[in-house]
Length: 81
Image (cartoon, rainbow, N blue to C red; front, side, top):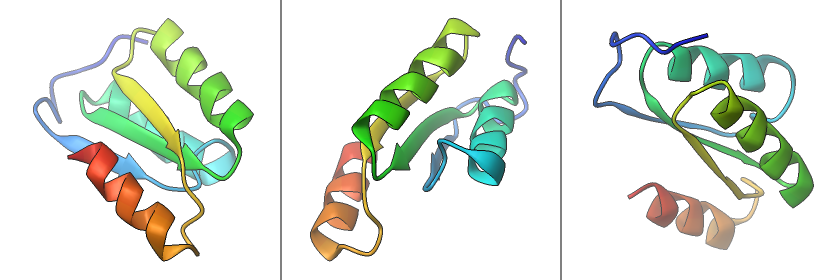
């Protein structure tokens, strides 16, 4: 699906976004034109979903983050900046 311009120029960060509702939200935000950052605790899952969404022409990057860990949350925020 081609992205629309509804959220063009916006950046969305979606945690726990490699499966289920989180993935659906990340996909929809990207379809609506946002640049999306996805994250999950498992590197292989992040890579798989980033590739899937990028192959659909969506503006998505990803990184590993366990949101229960302050240091990892800080790195995630820095990654988004």
